[in-house]
Image (cartoon, rainbow, N blue to C red):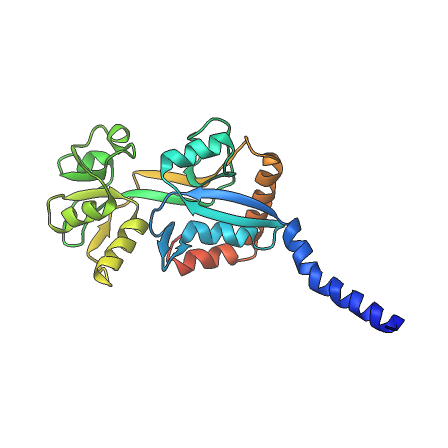
Amino acid sequence: MNKNKIVSLVFVFILLSSPMIAAQDRKIINFAIEETPPYAFIEDNKLIGILPDIVRAAYKESHYSLKIQILPPKRCSVWAENGRIDGIIGVANGISLFKGEIFSDILIQIKIHPITLSETIIPYKTIDDIKPYRVGIISGVGFESEFPELKVDTVSNTNLNIEKLLRKRFDIIIENPVIANYILMKKTNNNNNRLKVLFPPLKEIDLVIGFSSATIDHKKKYNDFNKCLAIIKRNGIYDNILKKWKVKK
């Protein structure tokens, strides 16, 4: 074999092996997330939603290989505290779910509103205005203690809350409109403007990633993500994700 052929073969080998080397150099980062359509859910065996879209877009040009899995909330917290995962996507900013949690910059702000039927007339400016009404809330998310002045009935999930509102078992439900409208659209293929969102919101929550400080290089992972998130917020990718999911800023 002559020298030119040897050089050519070596060059081809380098070209073919470069992607493999690059792939090996990419550090894996593991996140967990709770299933909450349309923020995160499984469809056609794929994890999709507003939050996975934001996080994937942020990491697309990074040196990390991203993995996201849906886990129950309690397991998310235990695994994050033990360093089994790098963090939890979509936690409330400033409310610690596990020891050593570090909060990223804001992924998205969600708003909790009173929601009624479009034909129902309820004058509303403050929480005092909805005290006389039957109010449906989801148990276990803290609304009982958050709004003790209301007379509430609890249900196990948003689907039941909407069903009882549609059947007029409740006058009002307290929900995030993005979730409520998405679920109703999926149930009916068109919500037909059945729901009316009352303003102002009762509560605003900034969703972030809760990074685990029990993992290797957690400070670097945290800082790298915040930088990547800032980039997609500047270059328009972030806004396009919100438009795709019909979310208003």
